[in-house]
Image (cartoon, rainbow, N blue to C red; front, side):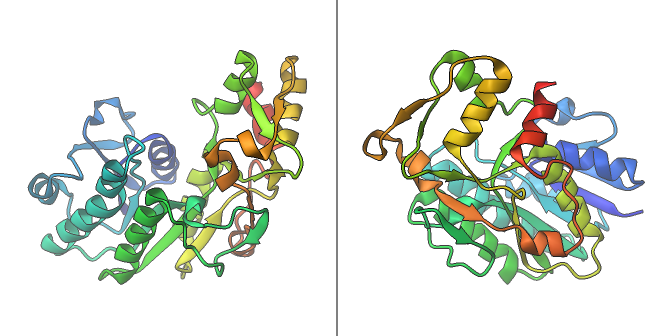
Length: 282
């Protein structure tokens, strides 16, 4: 049995915590308001922005630490607080407590890649996004890698699943749009596969420093929306030209490879968007 801390224990962290607890581990979930956590996860009331409170709240003798915090808003200040300052404070708290975890895991994002013309990217591709979101995440990654403990980073694509139904909602509301010519590729992973991948990497004897966490099927956004519309029985998305598409839509246009994660032995429950969304709609 391992002693495990999940710092920033939100949706993915809670799903992971339940998986780990069911596997026989002792799990603590750190968040500002831990009363919302299920009883199987031991709640720790702490703020990653409060270094003193953080140092005083960590349980001793931790074996593994997962950093699954998310920014609570889309601004440089909030991204820096979540992915740079919070990371540094957690490492300081672990060191101050004399902790010697076997490995740390950091959930990052494929938004660290600047490629936006449908290119294939993997762990060896340059990650040089110019926006503040990508920059802050890259800084957080480096803080973990440069720290005193072995650390692995997993860059997740767009996460969907229970409570994460943005595409479905946009189709039902009639607001869905996409660029069809040339296609804009999107990358995704089901929330349950996010948690399962993290548990899988923890169980490896020597995980690598970096993995891409995406399913097997990068797909054009129009294709995904049209498939969903057919399952929902609603009109398909509005097709727009690249000139009027949102910056965020175009920035995501890349195809991410999961070959390294697959080669490690991980098996997806939902290897593509059809399997994942079909389960979600049911």
